[in-house]
Image (cartoon, rainbow, N blue to C red):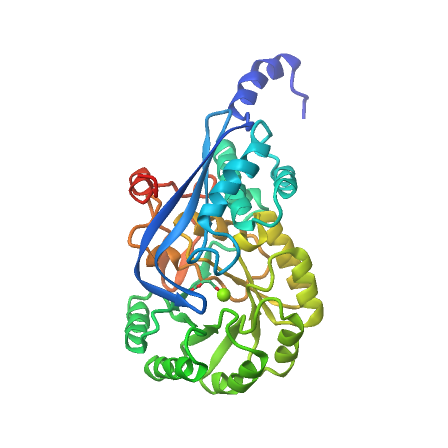
Length: 392
Ligand code: MUC
Ligand code: MG
């Protein structure tokens, strides 16, 4: 191959550089409160409205990328609330990114790590907006930037969480009949275990025999309660039990996992790589739920997944009721994981009264599809974003 002539280089370099100047010029945040189509209950809270922080990052080349930080009912599911996320981005995180190259995602993550401890949801929204802007700039998908997709669609779970067994059964049957969802997660832990389990028994009785049901206890049970109720869950053909014990009780989770007839999934217990390593070494579960709001960036999620994979845990693509924007960021990174045995639960866009993007993620034939197009592959709907903006 003949080398490029210096004259050719001189002719092309300046405009190309200008077009690709990813220096971070502006970061904007807003809180959106989006009503849900029904009450969503979990052990620590109940929501009728899902709150997000939407982040927009503009590069020097004019491109704007978007990201979303999701929470569930204030600082209850984890320590971050939307108010804290917005304040910490505005005061501490955005300032360290301004003027820095937006194409250097790992360098940006290091700066964010120095600027604030934890705050993983806030950091992940910035990371997603950078990925989006960078993908748009280079005309490639976020998944390509993360190593390339090994899957384009994901088997998807729907969560049942109204607490009303009749409503939950009807909801599950309607999802099955519509061909949208054939795997379900039921939220437990907000009532006495025996009450919760009779609710689950009603659901099991009314669904077709082979329907997969998993249960998320959101840290509500003690070791003794979990040991007491796991055999009953086994009889009800529950395939997976998510985070039954408090996140910090790794040793108790490990004891429970060792005698459990059902695989246990770690969720709130694992945010960081160190937590992943400790939980895996102690045998605290057999499956790990991955979420950007826990790990702080797409690359950190991949590292946590790598630790779990190497330790022999199976992987599950978790959610926190993100809209199509946050869900698209998750699917971009989930698409690149070598293993994702449990698919994903990114049903969030369908539980909102209105999605926050112009086009929602595509759900068909019991799968959710990775959007195509540069960056995250979705565009924020300016009308919806304004309608649900807390300030307007
Ligand atoms: C969680 O703990 O998994 C995700 C789905 C859902 O229903 O609740 C969330 C959080
Ligand atoms: Mg969970």
